[in-house]
Length: 118
Length: 110
Image 1 (cartoon, one colour):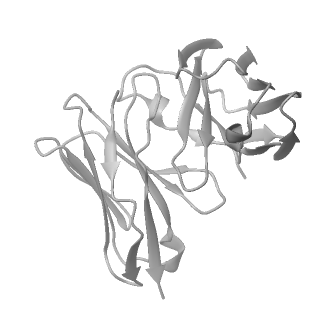
Image 2 (image 1 turned 90 degrees about the horizontal axis):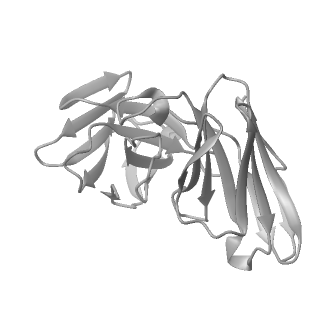
């Protein structure tokens, strides 16, 4: 069983809706991530949180708004999305650490939330 | 930004053969590499990491890193149908910000 839990598993929303994706981990990890994955493509990094602070935003449109209320939770708020935003959204977590040799690169992924925008 | 190139495949090998997956990278400063496996409909999972030049073995998996030639590879010995998946290569990020290659789809035929 995955130790990173994402809800909902599936979400269908209209372009005018506001919805949120949720992610929870209880591994004591202090870094959390959002990735977006389209069919037959690799996961694309969206956001990185380290110690509940946003450390990386990969030029993601403002219709995606991340939030990290505490060290165990990560949300992705969705508003005014476009059909092309339909994808699998993956949450991941890792140990804290800096540098390419750190445990920060050992990511544990959740099962994902599949989003369809109509 | 660190980039890696992978042959998207599909790479098809018979059961019991050695599967060789390759990844080339452009940033000479890359110090570590990570191989993730993603089964169809599932999320990625880490299978190997390598930090030093040379080989690193873990069971049927061997990761190889050649910094002079800027390539990293993953060998899977005695390939099994259960190894059929997409294999993603990524250089280590400064904050765990992994940027994955396109991935190589491996198919192991019984």
